[in-house]
Length: 211
Image (tube, rainbow, N blue to C red):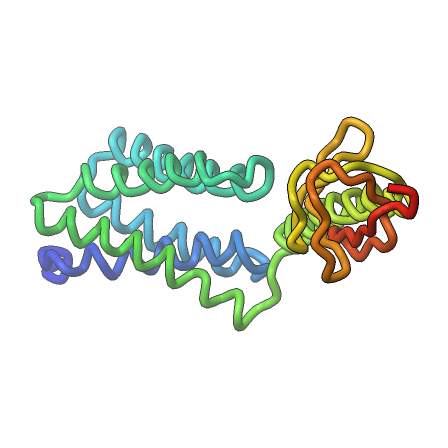
């Protein structure tokens, strides 16, 4: 078909293919987006490749998507996502008949990837992404609560100032050092103090009466 001789068509086909495939990963469309995406990508590779090369490039392309999914669901650090994206870009660039068409194909993948995020605003996201977000939130809250719990145990504990508090300074309680604040007082270095109040990670101290 004459339309496939146009270089810009690579942008349209790879863009729509990537848009729908990654859209299916992000939101639950019961396979509709997946079928559309597979259709567009298959058309792209079929136009430019023989059967053997077609299968190879399809495998490389879908391995890229799989790496992105694994990164989002398991590692969540972006390493595999970068490798997966590079794999997808290479798979669409190599079969292109010329440099311009390859550039259009790469641009299509990038635009399709960015555009797929729009589906999150329109459709219900898959449960696995909600679980990942919830897990990160719970982990952060657990860490924050753990710190708060440690600081709460400092109430009424005695320590010593490691520098002049004007009114902020550093204190030592036991073997640990903490940042603390006095109640507007200037407390000299080496003064024995007592923790009067703990609010989150803010420690309020006063000099001991006998110091």
